[in-house]
Image 1: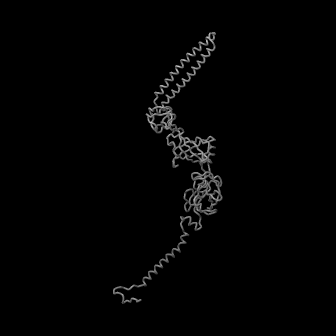
Image 2 (image 1 turned 135 degrees about the vertical axis):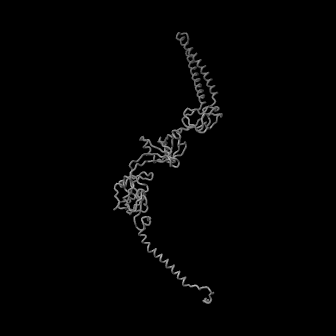
Length: 430
């Protein structure tokens, strides 16, 4: 290959200088190498001087205390509430049917109207029933006249018998006639009473206080006692009841309170279980357990004066069985389940934790009742438990929801007013 010489270069064009290009490459390598050396040199210093906001993982890598949130063991009144699915059930629902046959001449109610017991709802053509009553009354009057005449004849026969002017047989025959007419008079009276009942049934009235539903038959139609649909339905809405179910293993506590004569409160919540719609009391328990579901039905009564409960409405029932007074409670997040059973991490005065087994009771509304294993004022870990072990050192960053500052001692910021921890807390260090 031939190399170009200065003579071969076109006039006016300066030749390239390779030395300048290599100088740039060398300068770039020096800059990159210096930056990498600075990063490696200063990284350990940054790890040693990391601010207090370092994450738990970074602290754990450095072997420092684990940041945790703690809560103070306190006492409280804990309500024992049982939840069940329920249906609003009227105490009385009556389908208004005609007891006689005839043409419906009048519908005296409006759909959805509130009615009282005895209010007129409908009328049936009563002319034929009035005629039957009049006929039966005439038959009764005729038989009654015959009975009166027979009684007069019997009195005469009895006087003649006393004078030995008539045989005893005639007296006995006349006495039998009197009894026969008495029987006929009773039968006629029964027919009169039945006709009066039929005539009265021409006016259909409400048997209960309640609200009338939609009309099933219009005026002018022929109705009879065999109609299955009826004329309308009247439903009692004040008061009203809720039928709900509870598991069979919870019935013992409820039955004990009922036998003791306690009035148990029941609250009805809407479908979302977020809004209370009515408050009532427990009426009774069913007498059998449903073997298919393992539940027992209960009925609660509600005044329903504002009619917030509607028949067949779905509700969530909350039954207050009793209240545990001065129960020792901790947040449920503090209680762990493991090989030793139920346990918590107890924070000591030296900011180390110890595994403490506990006996738990009712768990409700995010709090768990502790029956044994802790004392009021103890501090337990509620957040950061998964990174702890027995005798581990911790750094309390939060007590009962209140953050602890970088310069605060773990015992300087008790969470709850009136707790022993608050009374025994020391002041800030000098």
